[in-house]
Structure formats: C-alpha cells, structure tokens
Image (cartoon, rainbow, N blue to C red; front, side, top):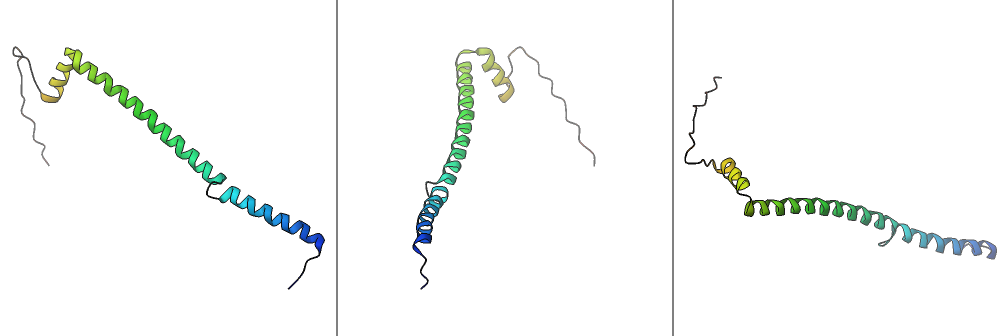
Length: 100
C-alpha cells in the first residue's frame, strides 16, 4: 500500500474530516438544505393559516348577521329559497326554447 509522507498526511486527514463535516452540515438530516425546505413549508402553512383566519372571520360575521339582521335573513330567504311576501305578485314567463 502506498504511504504518504507525514507532511501530506497532516493536510489530508484534517481535510477529509472537514469535508465529512461539511457534507453532513449541508446534506445531512438536519442540514442546511433541510432547514431551507422546512422554512418554505412553514411559510406555506402560515399563508394557509392567514387565509383560514380571514374565512373564519367572514363566517363569524355571517353568523352574527343571520342571528340579528332581519333584512339579511330575508335576502337569503328570497335568493336561495325563492320566498316572497304575501302581498307580492310573481310573474312567471315561459322560457324560450333554443332551436338547433
């Protein structure tokens, strides 16, 4: 087997150890690449959380309006269920048939 002189070994051994440590610092399970990936995941989750908070606030406001605002409740009943008041007249027009 080839033997290196002592002077070269003094550079190769620490250099190999440094390369080994550097490799695991960058590519290891808790390395820099993993940290960057986790930060990106965290930012995505925080964005989803902010969107969910906005949606939640809208739903809370709608619940309050449904419980207390009669005009809002009436508009929902008219729009979604087609309800009318007793003194209103409804006109229904036949739909035109499309000819091919």
